[in-house]
Length: 240
Ligand SMILES: Nc1ncnc2c1ncn2[C@@H]1O[C@H](COP(=O)(O)OP(=O)(O)OP(=O)(O)O)[C@@H](O)[C@H]1O
Ligand SMILES: [Mg+2]
Image 1 (cartoon, rainbow, N blue to C red):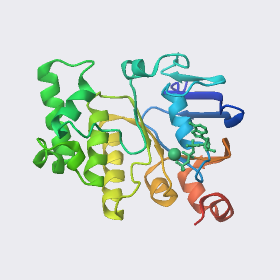
Image 2 (cartoon, rainbow, N blue to C red):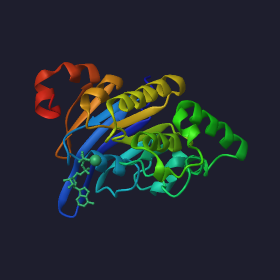
Image 3 (cartoon, rainbow, N blue to C red):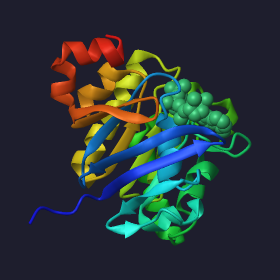
Image 4 (cartoon, rainbow, N blue to C red):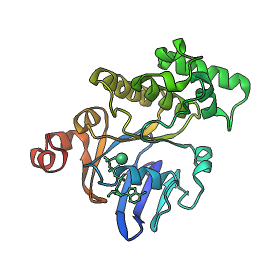
């Protein structure tokens, strides 16, 4: 029997007032998979991640992590089920130092020794953070801040990482480095990643599967290779 997908989204619908933002979205992501969620501005990508992580109440449908229904579970409990969400802009706390922000990611679970090991792993993964460990997060560059946001999420040792536009505003080189880090992490730890991206080409280059949202619904999905080679689909939805 094939292994159950670690993340299953079943017919998820949600609205803002009278406006439907997600219309019966279904997707499933296998353990260790990296999938891209693509689509134009306003397509519903952020709403999808917020609905998965419990930050947005859904009208109907279900979110299952490891087969467990988390649809009505409060957002702050998701981390205990292995799911962590890095929001648009990263959501780091600008007044706290790099190190304090990293510690926050692991607060809920680990003892001091485990936290120290995790902290060292994050500095190995993102060396620029080590040099700046005592600096307030508000003084970091955009790329460093994004590294910190991802590092903080990884401190919780998630099984599923939801990332909302980690490359927004970053130079292509930094974007490539972040994408490569995600790719390596998956290989090393079996992490599952759902990656929302505007930059479809770079996202599809590191993901296995892509879902293209259009007006709140899944317009196309398929393997990343197939999406990259489908000229008509690329022109229609991805603009390259
Ligand atoms: N808090 C809100 N109240 C009302 N409407 C909202 C709210 N948040 C999002 N929307 C609407 O829901 C739709 C989907 O928005 P969402 O932020 O999910 O899009 P997105 O795909 O993430 O876009 P972008 O690429 O610009 O980040 C948009 O039409 C948006 O205007
Ligand atoms: Mg968005």
